[in-house]
Image 1 (cartoon, one colour):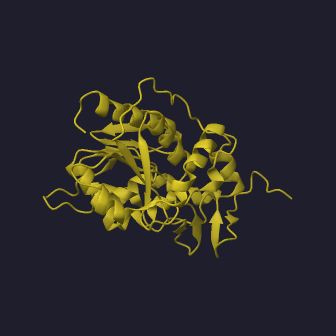
Image 2: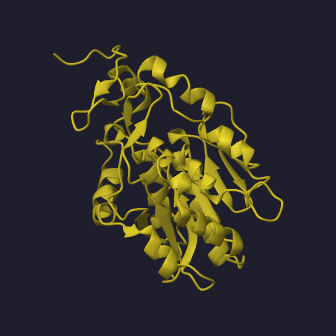
Length: 294
């Protein structure tokens, strides 16, 4: 018998002990068979061969909960694929990397399977998602003053809470971005990766001290177990920790809000995926076509 749409019990993940997918009710409320992809037509795309975007994906699926259960997560497909589509349509290549070099993990339960454009793009990048670059190698070989990377993309999904905030290689990428005036594109839980920057050495709380961003609010994360989206509560609050580093999350709810603060482009949730993609594409095109230093 199919699960009722009002079933708020998390669904067991048969691939891992004591791990769970979101409940049928929460899936009915927060996923859709099609994305809101729109406006990814850029009449004057970048046609050069140099500038690329580095996407750092989650390589761990299971997020520990405070009650001993695990949330079966990864990168949210809308938050990952829709901004990528805009960037590629605007003429930019994307290199995919993970900390370990293992495949990017996705929240397949949120995949918009009836969305031809998104699914075709997912297939197009399948090899990169399955065989990403190891971030350590990117740091050793791909960064520096003459790097071809114009921006770093940190997609959302609760999988971004595992590994990225503690990674010394993510830290190296963020320090390089800051030192060379490159762009960061991130949304929802993706900004948790900014924690890898740690404390600054020049008296600031971090290299991003004073920045304002949109992100998924801690207060909303605290309510999701009530509807079975997660099987328990998170063991820590990424927004609270970002605030301690001097980063202000400006939104208290999710509405699809985006924000540009200097070279930081951010969005609040999956609702912001399309708008953030448009903002990122327009911003990067301006940087390479408008004479702005990149």
